[in-house]
Length: 215
Image (cartoon, rainbow, N blue to C red; front, side):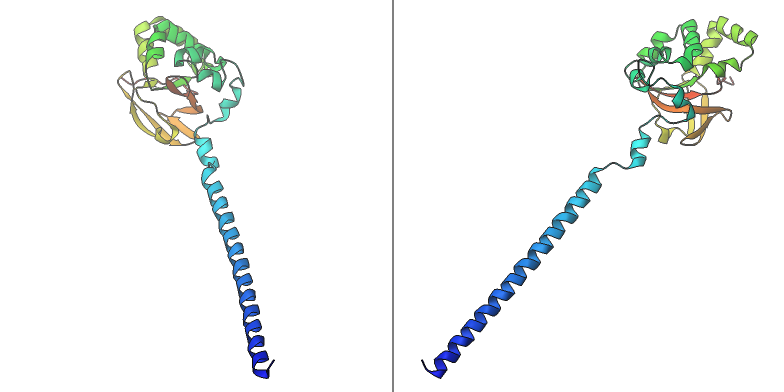
């Protein structure tokens, strides 16, 4: 074999080795890049599919008095969500005086058959703030009692994000809610103790003072 031939073969072998090396590097780099892209995409997908804590909380009841609601059974949040509002309230021990008043006024069927309403529900302690003689007189006067109770109901279902503002009631007069979640006050004197409680046909805000219409 001549010197010239040997030099030509050596050059070909060197060129081939260089090509293989470059090819291997290119393949390795591409694999790494592809793997990184896939990992980033998976991470982004997981982030997009996970709900934020604030969004989850927005769908839940809020307020200090929510702890007094039974954890299970018909009077629990899950149980109340299955029944129309008057029935649901009758299963909640915080609202027994309200339920008595609703029955006295003959409003059980009216509230249970209404669709997409909001009820501001005074606790037993809220009714206890009214002097006994005045409360007895109110319970005995069906027309006045109906006026007071329907003042606690709005004809639209108000989420916490829409609660602040002035709202027309079934009684006909307006009530006003101020504040932001979880601190809402109705008519400047009745605080929301447990809000965003769902029933089959209503959203309930449990309050610490009975609301009185001005008209």
